[in-house]
Amino acid sequence: MAIDFDKIDRTVDLKGLQADVEDAKKNGGGDFPTIPAGKYEARVESMEIKGTKADPNRPMLAVSFKILSGEYKNQRLFMNRVLYGTKNDKNMIASAMGFLEKLDSGVPISFTSYKQFAQLVLDVAEAIDGKLEYAVDYDDTRFNSISIDEVFEVED
Image: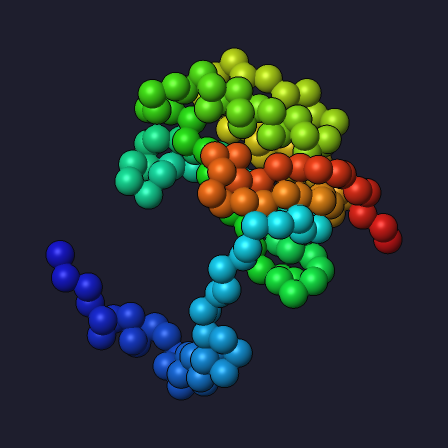
């Protein structure tokens, strides 16, 4: 099925979009820098169980952190952990559980089913949202690319 570009063009404010595109180009245009390995102060921006790009029915823990200070302020760090259909699902789930525990949300971490775990991840995300920030160690060459070094309560 072909994309109906005429239909899309009719539904979009093209002049406004063109101005936004020009503005984005002036401000880096989505050309994000590579974040080097190191320690960063960050907060969890999003966290959920979602399907992989290759298979939307294959669940993975997807976490996005926003860097809060320094040269890479406002840039993102990403961590994905596939939880089903791997050679070692039990260790992948255990790794995800360990990560969730280190977030120090106060929510008891357990796995009884994928459905329960997906809800648990949302509960943890809600419990820490706007309340906790983290000192993280980031190295995308490692399996556990983001580790939590310290937990801080957000100051008002």
